[in-house]
Image 1 (tube, helix red, strand yellow):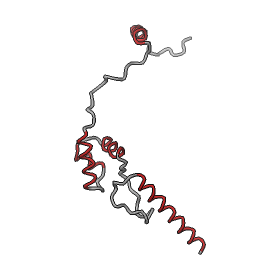
Image 2 (cartoon, helix red, strand yellow):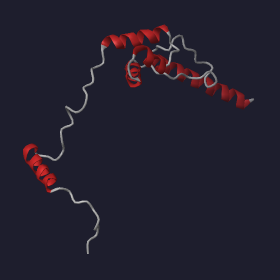
Image 3 (cartoon, helix red, strand yellow):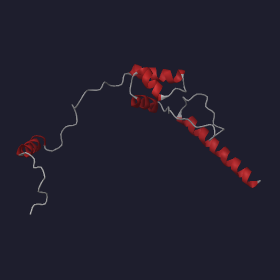
Image 4 (cartoon, helix red, strand yellow):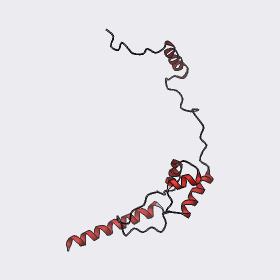
Amino acid sequence: MERFPNRRIPNFLTFVRAVQHHRDHGCFKTAAYDRGKQRPDRVENIEEAVLNSVEARPGSNTRRLTLQHEVSHTTIWRILKEQQLYSYHVRKGYMKDLVYSTPIETIEILQERVKNAATAIRNNRITTESV
């Protein structure tokens, strides 16, 4: 008795081609290159233009930058990430001691400010709890 009586049986040429491909290439997996439309590499002047836009308007969001420079939002995210610029910011209610001069700061400066703010909050809790 057959286990799956209504199953589709592949054409015999499917197996012949698979065996021939394995003989030619040594594996069943097809090459992942040369598929689909070629994408151009990111142009350096676009990267520079995006960074100039962020420097001119630090509060600008990635959607606006995408429309302005006519590139995908993932390209904008990658450019910002490579420069260690992030589109999020610490809200005023979370850490009052953290004040940004510009959003373009190195990660070391941000880490130092976060550490200082955390110790200030910790010290504030200790003095508040002891009273």
